[in-house]
Image (cartoon, rainbow, N blue to C red; front, top):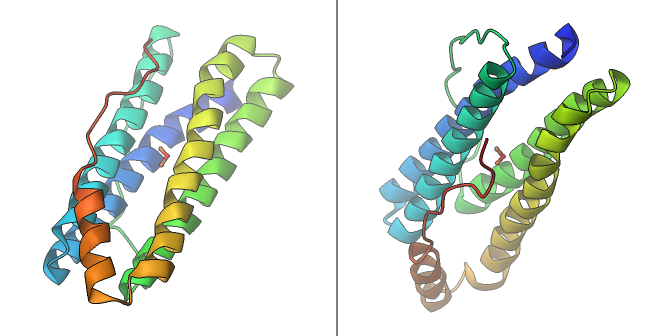
Length: 169
Ligand code: FEO
């Protein structure tokens, strides 16, 4: 594995833990709002992000690379409303997609086919993550302004079940 690819993979551990931290803060926001379904949905999202971090960590170790863990930044959003939070979630997933794409580009340039194959799962996952975040924005726009609609949406989100990533290393 070339150094640039390894460096980006190592940085991604931190980015994924930051994502977990950001979504935990979103859960924190919705808990304060009394929307425990939204809070639950983001708590599970935080768990998934932690899983992603561990996959990058394990992949580096399995390939005889040293892992260096840095400080995880405090979650930062300017979100003040429910819609702001949901839109910040979508923007963040698009940002993460750009990070995965950048690692893929480095692996491609280095002809690192193993890392490209490892990243394929994340490329697909990012498609799902963006869709989930986008669906939340759409559903909130449709139903969030009505008390009954918001209650139903909150109940729907409460049903989300945590599943471990389908990728094993
Ligand atoms: Fe780890 Fe939400 O992507």
